[in-house]
Amino acid sequence: MADDGPVEHGYPHLGTVRAAVTALYRRLSYDTVRTFSSSVAPADVAFCDTDDLHLGAQRVARELVRHYRLPDARLIVGFREMKHAANVELAAGPEYFVELNDRFRTHRRDIGAALAHEVAHVYLHRLGLSFPGTRDDEVLTDTTATYLGAGWLLLDAFRQDGASSQKLGYLTPEEFGYVLAKRSLVFGEDPSVWFTSPQAYTAYTEGMALARRDERQPPLTAAGWAGRRRYARDRRHAQEHRSSAAPASARPDVPYRFTPDGHGPLRVSFPCPTCHQWIRVPVRGRVRARCGLCRTVLECDT
Image (cartoon, rainbow, N blue to C red; front, side, top):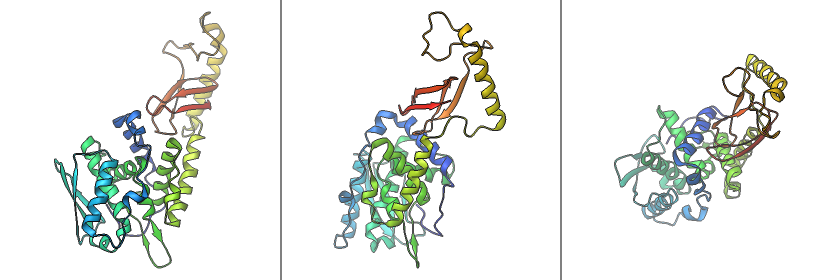
């Protein structure tokens, strides 16, 4: 896990983040994702300066292993001087060696954040889920940790003042806030009450604004001029012929059964606001559909 250089802001990895959420639902299933409805509790990963360094790190690691439901995994935590914040050796298991930067000897409050990322690496390794390229794979790891309830620790580790700044992980603070907001909208959980960093709260607020905009996006928003014109033409054509082409037994509330060119009903595609899985529905006015991946119910005008 990296922790160097100036703090980047904005949403440079947004496409990869959305792909990571979709990959999680596809690999785990809706029901498995729902088992992570409760985040890691602050009390379970709290680290007092009077606690023994190694025993305390092992305790926090055990709590995170339990949260990710890896009962047979054992983390051996050590400290050494290194460039990055932390590193994990992904072997066959069940023992995994995690190295933390020496600075965590005196910055113990952030040990839970560093371990949340590294245990997520172990979890994804066990699942066999990865993205090509180191950067995209690290974004997948941060997104997984955050969406499954441990990543609020990573955002809370973001602190900034006039003289210095600190951020853990590969996502920007706003991207962490966005993934946390997506999780909050799905599970009805408010992680902002756990933040000790005012900068983390600001990033979460900005991420929530983007997550709510996702839910208000109509289909074809990203389509070009030609795509929108073609869609309008096809929909108009369907409306003109619907009554004559529909079978007599068809109910008026059933979506189009009309096939103008013999190749099936006209359809429009748009991403689910929760998991970003692409949904295809017949051309019509008011859409009410359920995402087959995360089961989100969608209602919008096409």
